[in-house]
Amino acid sequence: MKTILYLSCLLILCFGIISVKGDPCMNYKVLDSVDDSRRSAAKSSGHLCDNMLESGWYRIISKAGERMPTECIVGGLRCGTMSSIWMNGSYPVTNEIRAVTACAANYNGNCCAYSHQIKVKNCTNYLVYSLVPVAPCYQAYCFGSELPCPTGETSDNGFSPGCELDPCHSSNYDILKGELKRSSNYTLTVNDVAIEDSRLRTGWYRIDSVTGNDIVNYSVPMMQCGTLYPLWMKGSIPDDRERGKTVNRKVCRSGLTGTCVQEYNIKVRNCGTYRTYYLTQLDVDKSAYCFGMLPVPKPTTLTTTTRSTTTTKLTTTTPRSTTTTTVTPTKTSTTLGTARTTRANPVSSISTKTSGGISTTQSLIKQTTSHLPQRNEKSSDIIIIVAVLIVLVFLLLIVIVAIFILFRIKPHCLKDMIPPPPTYEDTMKTEKMTNLYTQMEDTDHYSCIKDNNYNEGYEEISYDKNQTVQENKLYLQNIATVAVSNQVTQENMLYLQNPITVPLDSPEKPKI
Image (tube, rainbow, N blue to C red; front, side, top):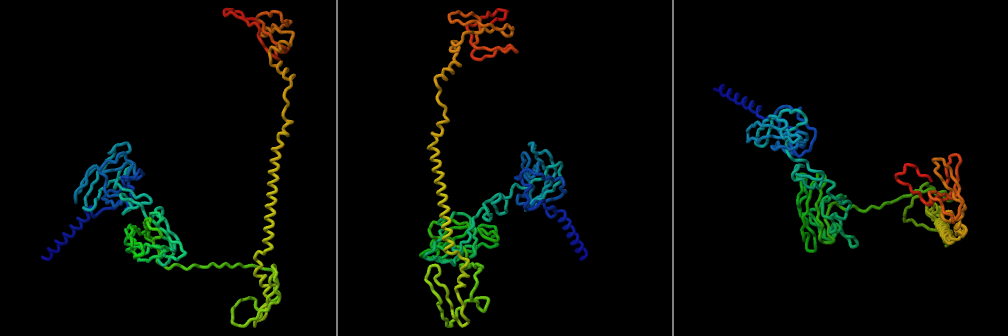
């Protein structure tokens, strides 16, 4: 009986192991990584190809989404590839395995240019897919429809939807740096200038101060935090448990009647190593937010030591090479050797008598003050500067006077350069050269020019004012004939008297 029971248990165990091993909900591979959004339907084109994908069951764990699209991705060029594969069917119910067709949509508008047979099982809380390699490239399976939030924005998982302004991004907050007076340990004095956040612009702020970078979260009386009416936060500062989350808080303004006469709303964001605060502009003068709970450091005095060398020879030396000044109750007597009340040298020598000996201080005074500028040196520098200024002013006056004189005498200088007006003889000569009828009166002959192309030469005709000039003659006054080329060179004017009338039907060439 025990043996039968043992064998039964063994068979049940083996069957369970085999069942678990064959269940795709327990035996699958994870496709890509959690933050991988390349397969999102919102992802633009890329060069992703699933031709090397091994056949098997896959689970998608991605912030972009875990479900394969069930609608055509028109035009393709999505899911990080050129031909986007979508599921042409519906999802199975719980624990159901359904065979569906996966279609690849391309850029030509074909929603099912290539098809692949896959399986899908509903594992209650997630889906698993039986995928096969694809061909040709570039084809890839699509999963999800979200994208990472843009730079400067964030959401609960860093992906859409729900992306909003990221208060931890450096481009989204301002820094309040070095404002020690905002510390809760700083008390406003009578002559102090109060901080006024009524001038503060509403927005996100990060604090950078040696007194602390977080808002004061306990009650603060008036005159603290470098202002008259300080504001402190009610509640705790967000810790690592609220990292990456924005929480709402209340701040109280202290006044004459208590430490919480009015409340305001703020937001706090834990950015890990620091926190940012969403502060609103206050409506009360001489009021400000308190930041920092550490003691205010005391002001430090900066001491500068200047080492100088001198060539003054000491007339009296002390037994020790180093000189130290100490104040002791021993009796000392000061002897005034010589005291002159002059401006240049008020005290010539002062000797101090102590138990250790007598030392002359005149040379020590010269040695310690030799590196400082003397009054005579300052006076000489001032004299040089004044002299240079006087010379520059004198040169400027000379230039101004020269320019004035030049403009005053300019018409007299140009008087000789202006040509005199033309005389009557010049006017008549010019008129004779240009006036046709004037030229006609000054000559006694006209020259009759015949056609040179026919080489008929020319003849001169005596000029008579009462004579009727023959028709069909072209007259030129004062002509010259070049013997070589038999060309007429015109010297003055050419005119035509009694123009030629040529019949249109005349076959002969007219003669001049």
